Image 1 (cartoon, rainbow, N blue to C red):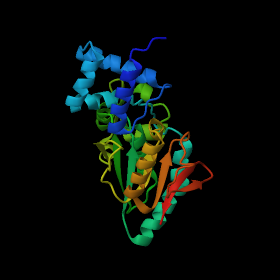
Image 2: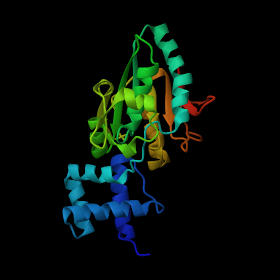
Image 3: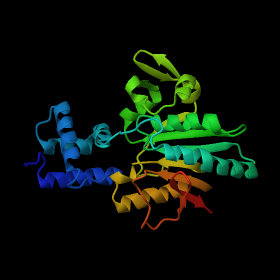
Image 4: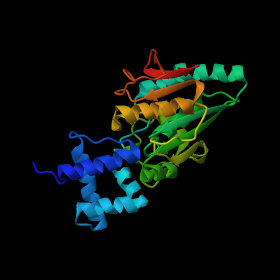
Length: 271
């Protein structure tokens, strides 16, 4: 089958995207990059692929739009329930003990690669429900897709996006609106949505709970290692890292410790 991109062009765009974001394209997912490039050329009314490459070098906003389009934003509320069971039954009791011993009240959570916001809102509902006074959760939700962040920030979800959300939470934290539901203000206030490219330091520090699920799969080994090292720097001395159930730090030279609980596996920073 003939490709839309020549092998040379594929390498050029692949390198450009990798250098900017750490996102990797191989022969197996080449078709995703090709279809997204076709869409952008159509949208910009550009006929030659070389002209689009030149545009990307000159136009930062268009480059952001392309990066936005090549990341697949598959998510839902309470995706991978065993992670939330682990959070409730293991991680939060540990965090509560640590905060009490240090006489601290803030619990910092980072949802990296948050897509359209279902994950950070799921975290916010869980923490609102399970975190005792006087502990206060602060959630930062970041993504490389501005379009996805805008959906999360708006907090409106059509009916078909509410799958997996318990009825009790739906009644408590959402209001019926048009053909969907609007997240209530009390929950929206708990989350700061922020554009962030994981290739760079976020500037966040002392993060207690880190969710970065199904994001590392976009990176090659070198970029994965760099991202994980930056997470280590961002996290507090006793903190917890959740990655996707199909992802692993196995074989990677990292300071995180593997942790197996009765519900799911995760990683911890313990120094």
